Length: 111
Image 1 (spheres, helix red, strand yellow):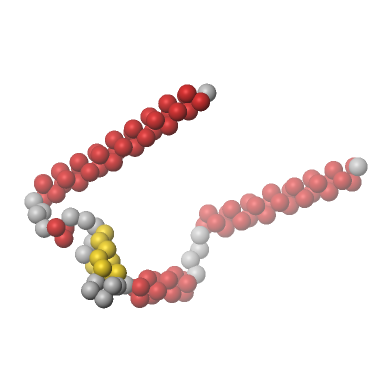
Image 2: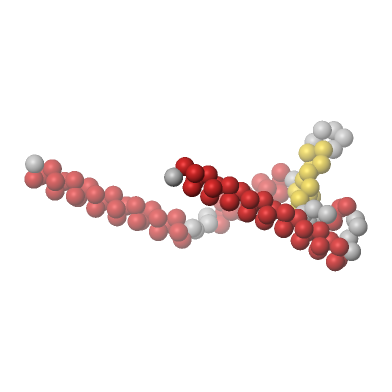
């Protein structure tokens, strides 16, 4: 059983490495096809350190600051986002808890 697990883990690692190599190869192919030689276009997410020691981040060429993140957080709090699956999970857990409590009460009344 241990050998089988090791073989499966090794196979998964090899396949994962192959996926990463394939993604890198596809990325280089896309760059060659588009003809981008500009290093600024080489990555979607960059982090640089400024002269004053501050960290600057850019996503797809647009600078991101902590103020932008705070505004988005406030906007989400204002919207009071509703997660359908979360509400279903909460109701399901309440039903299961109530069912087990009733079962335990029945079993204790028999004893």
